[in-house]
Image (cartoon, rainbow, N blue to C red):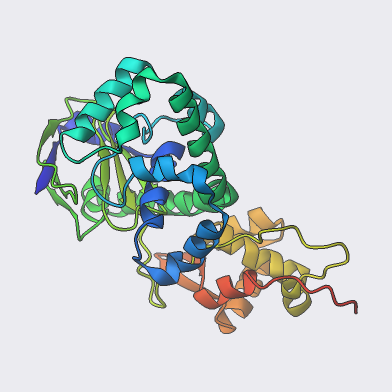
Length: 339
């Protein structure tokens, strides 16, 4: 089944690429947690998340299943910091809750307790506590990494526009599920959703997603323009990267960073920065680390020779990303040995 977005010239001019809306990315993470796709990239994250999630998480997992529909008040494309948006969920009008749940119920069964959600303030409070807990485990420790990957993808999309215009950008969003057949963007929806939406001059907000690994998602009611979430591409020659998993606890006093011991402080900082900003250019890398571009280039060359990063060229620009080996080294726990 295909959903079709119809563009005018004005729509193309107003289409933009934005950072991931927190609730939309959280819903993608919840779905991703409940399947087994891309074990290399998401396996360590899933194991860590399952170990930390408590029984409170069940309410959110019941309302956002691995496939199918979820109520949009939990998955909105609203812009703002995560805590602001979580508070907005708490303040959702009861009429909106009823409408969203009724729409989901047309497609799939709701958990029995959800039928009382709009009329039971204590039940809504429990759901919001569940949402806060799930956010704290699944997304909060990785939000900087997620926004870094999204920023790198946005840079890639802007280079596509410069090289081949909006045609090039729209045609390359998700070749397996999104097809640009001018002036219509055709999206193969896992949910089976079929229909047409005329953008009518509003344009489209494109949102790169770390956790939206399998299928695009659309919020046609988002304001001021509809939103299309697509998966960040990980088709580099050496395969997909493992999602960077932060240590569960801070290093104990006196701990030494094995990465700094092995590589030196500056080179370790370069590798950390590339992991946090995959796809960054040498100039961007130098600015982020606070070193001169020739020094950044030298360190990148050494890391590439050690197979800790990969470098691809876009015209005259070198773009750096970590390899699976580099991510594994970054995830090595600190040693308390004294030297």
